[in-house]
Amino acid sequence: MLADAPLAPPAPADRVFRALGDPTRRAMLERLSEGPAAAKQLQELLGITLTAVIQHVGVLEDSGLVRSEKVGRTRTCSLRPEGLAVAADWIAQRRALWERRLDRLGEVLDEEDDAP
Image: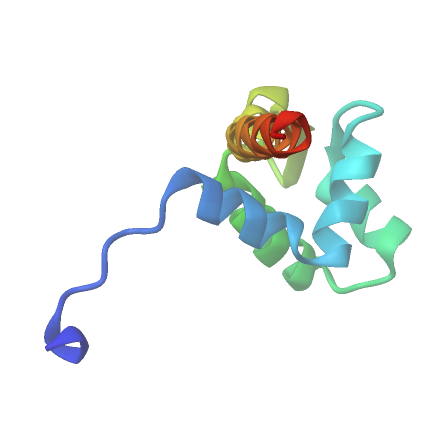
C-alpha cells in the first residue's frame, strides 16, 4: 500500500525548485548574485524579520544554492552558483527529451506528406 511506503528523501532538484518557488528566496538570490551579504542586510532589503531571513537562508543552504558563515554575531551569506546547475541540468534533460520527440514527430509528418 502506498500510504505505508516510506518517503524517499527529496532529490536535489526537488530541493532547488522548492527553494526557487518562493519569491522572497528568489529576491535573496538576486541580491546575493551581486556579492555576499550579511543576514541583517537581507533583512533590511526585504523588510522581514531576521528570524524569517535565517529560515529562508536555511532552505537555500539545504538546496545548495547558498552558503552562510557566522563570524561573531554576523552571518554572511553568499551564492553558490553550482547549486543552480542542478536546476539547469534538470531543465536541459527535459528540453532534450522534448526536442527528440518533436524531431520524431516532424519526421513522421514528413513521411506522411511524402506518401502517395
